[in-house]
Amino acid sequence: MKKVLLCRVGELTEGEVRQVSAPGFEEDFAVYMMDGQYFASDDLCTHGMVSLSAGEIVDGQIFCPLHDGAFDIRTGKATVLPCRIALKIYAVSVEDGNVFGLVPQD
Amino acid sequence: MNGAQAAGDVWDRNDLKLDGGRVIDRRVYRSKDIYQAELAQLFTKTWQWVGHESEVPAFGDYLTVQLAGRPIIVARGEEGRLRAFYNSCTHRGAMLATAAKGNCGGSFTCMYHAWSFDTAGKLESVPKAEAYGAELKKACYDSPAVRLDTFCGNIFVNIDGKAPPLDEFLGASKQHITEATEGQEVLGRVRWKLEGNWKLWHDNFRDNYHPMFTHQVLTFLYQGVEIKGENHDLGGGHSYMKFPPQGSGDSYAKFVQRLTGRAYAGAPAMGTPDKQAYHVIMAVFPNLDIQFGGGNGSPYSSYSVLEVVRPISVSEAIIEIVAFGHVGEPEAVRQERLESLLSIQTSSGKVSADDTEAARRCTIGLGASEAMRWSNMGRGQAPGMSGAKNDEYSLRGFYSEYKKYMGDILRSENN
Image (cartoon, rainbow over the protein chains, first blue to last red):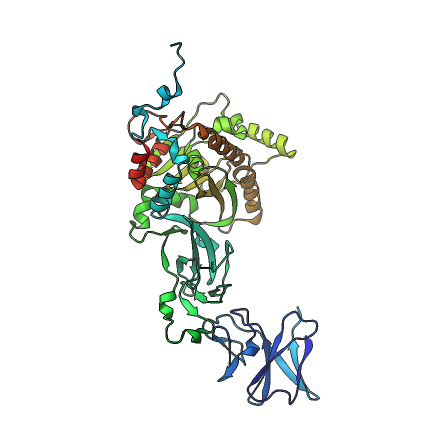
């Protein structure tokens, strides 16, 4: 498990999503603030080559800006076509004002 | 005259014309007009083998193929159903998939403007679609379906929506396709390019007069041995040749040892003892061939292999060899079988390389077609549809069916 600094508490407002390019990781992450909680996932949509962080959060789902498919932010499950393959999500821990993603290592 | 006749006197005779297919006008291998007619009347109207269900077992699995210049995707849908549609974006025409096979994850997204299609070719999503206002009728932009049907796990497509059903088309060949492929799965494919007309390759498959002369690897088995076996025209352009292993496996083992420097133990047995007792070479009209059978010690021990030849121009074709193995067979047996197959039946195989060279020599030799217009296919004169192994009932059956599809162009080319 590797801890990745995603943002600091207070940087994201409710309903906001942001792209995080973390050192040591080839792929970017997306960090979300929703219902006062933080969530994290891969940033790349599993359907097409696009950053989900450029999309919109509606009803607990992140909508892809390219094809309008969507994923459940809490579970990663694909909820709206053409998205079919689940999005990888990561556990989040908040420590000393920092928001960390917990990324399993192969 | 001193006995030497002018070439025209010998060859350009009316009684050698395409009657009953005993001779064939060599322009079928060289004429661009005839080739265009083949695309329009033969390859777009016959059922074409494109793959086997074992190659696309899961949702999102797909394979691609080009038939008569038309790019096609065969994909398995969420509910397990196989469908075929054109591999072309309905927006600007770019190919949706470029790999020979793969898994699309459920959608094919065009690399050009990212229009996205599902496994049935239905348009799912258009990026930034609001710029079309209310104009874009998405349902009009589904990629058109291509007819698809399967037989014994083999996937066929037909570009012609009105052609007779697959079952009817395969006719008497069905029994033998079942014998060859039932309970089996595809292990892999090898492709290479033939510098010659596609029919030279297909003719070669139906020709069992050449092996004992063309293939040094086999000549050992035929020395001083009576030729046994059968050659059947099954109707509908399909054919079937069956023959027992000939000669001694020892001479083959010696040949392989000389070639490779290591002892040859023979390929593993597969199938029923009855199946191992003979080899079968069958052809499905117009461009599919299947070989199966085997016998211990013989170069063709225990295998099923399928070959399909598809033209890409009048003088070039892609040959594809598809290896089969029994579902659940031990890995070691499979490896041995593949090695045996690769050494015989692929681009550099001991048999296929000879056939490729024969086709190349024919291609250059047929440049003399103006002086020598006809190729004789008259071996086996007894009436009916069956003869000895190296008779040519099978070849005549092919050209007789070929003429039905090609119609007028052969007659006009013939005068």
